[in-house]
Image (cartoon, rainbow, N blue to C red):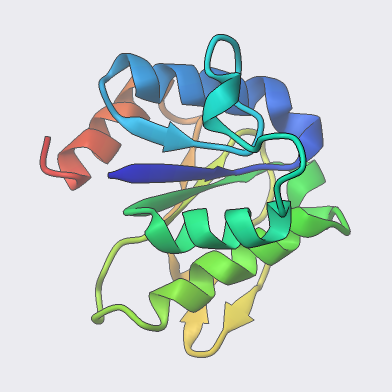
Amino acid sequence: MSIFISYAKEDTEFAHELYSALKARGLEPWMDKPPAPYQADGLIPGEDWRRRLSEEIRRAVRVILVLSSTSIAKVGYVQNEFRLALEAMAYMPPNTRFAIPLLIEDCTPPDLVVGSISLANLQWTNLDEIEMDVFLNMVEADLGR
């Protein structure tokens, strides 16, 4: 039951905290460059990283989209990860929860639409309004744990 963490490089510190918190709850987070001592669980030297990221998104039971003023405005692969998550949802039954937008600072989620799936239509969680533990409790409940 992998949980893919999509984040901008500038938000690595937060992504590491999220990874560790999910791991501490017995969940199976995945990110390209996890924190110590889990580095070997991410990408390995020489690996085709684009292929692996795409595979991990498709394999995941949830994708947490870490949204910050940086990640929503950045030109880079994080934008592709957002699109891949929404694209994967297009193949799922209606009302399936898959992409979980998580605002780590005050910002407006982008008006990103892939097929019939709109990021703006997905309920997001703002960590300015709730504690991280509450968010993690919601993720666990959503996964039936």
